[in-house]
Amino acid sequence: MAQWVRLCSVAEAPAEGTVNEQRAGEFEICLARVDGELKAVDNLCPHRRGPLGQGWLEGKAVVCPWHAWAFDLKTGCAEYPEGEKVGVFALCIEGEDVLVNLE
Image (cartoon, rainbow, N blue to C red):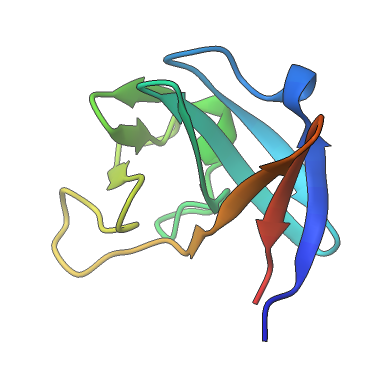
């Protein structure tokens, strides 16, 4: 069952082509804006728990600022090494709020 909670306001969301860090309950989330669309993935890189929301975008992937692992924002899959992955969260916008599904 969906568990939608407020992540941030639309004004607090990152600008086009950038990422930032947000918190929803116990979850740390990397929020990105690519091609005008917001995407959300787990903020912690599985390698050394680097903060993805402090990284940068390359195409449609977020790059960890610590060791440059890149994760596709749609699937959460790493470009390298194969098999590594971060969680992906569904988002929606209601009025001026960005909501995330923590299910």
